[in-house]
Length: 343
Image 1 (cartoon, rainbow, N blue to C red):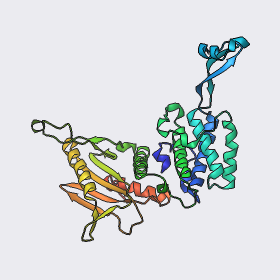
Image 2: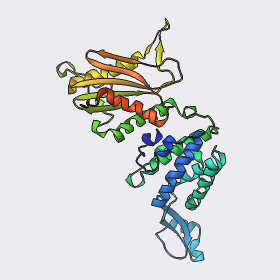
Image 3: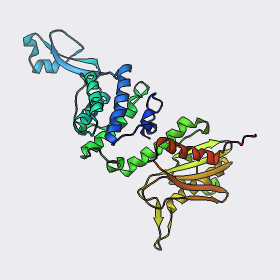
Image 4: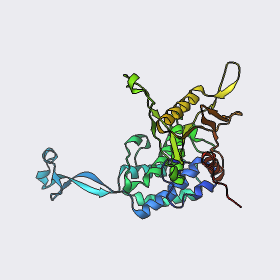
């Protein structure tokens, strides 16, 4: 799921992680880092220009006149100079080094994978070892040249968040150290990127749905909320709006004990569908796709309202990958069934 969420599925060799059994999350994270960092080392670690300041006998770069004077360097026949060095000591590599070190020292990682992580550390000799608590994840940026770092640093963030909160692997779940908002974002990105990779013909995208306003009677529409979808699939004159939901409880319970799909969720998807149909025409449906929980009752809805089909059910993320993928493919075949073959 994380490979799709971080848009790095296309890296060859990562498919094996979907079928291999891991005793704990740290073991999985270590395996992905070993594979990804090894590939990055072969391609070459990211380098960047780092500003250095040192006292030299010859001029190099820019002379720092102020420091030269205050340190009385001229009396020793030297100058304080600033110059740029092209080094691998970048923010991205520092994160990789400190997380591999954390997994070696504090992670629940097997002896074999610990040895593999140790074998990678010499490639980071010129990279500083930083305090993991000092990492500012939102400042790490990516471009095409270092796109391979995106998944790796996403894994690194999960490791740091877990270990800094005292988790030691074992049966620890992602939900133990990630906020609901982070988990929902991970789930949403996973769904969208899965369809981008496997069903580009359906033009998967998280597009905004425009309100079906009557311009002659809508003089003040500035404060209307934006209808931002999680996933829209389009093809063969049909449109499916998928709304990803990741909650601790997937059903609401009335004061009489009756369970039902959340009213807010249902009104939301209905609003998306009705406004989309008014603007684009064609057949428009809506699907509330909840991440399955351990509760005995789960959403199971398939109704047609005003001619629009609305579904609500769950995706079991604990299933083996092939079974999980079958569930995802069922979403497509439900709205775009394969044509019947003639004998």
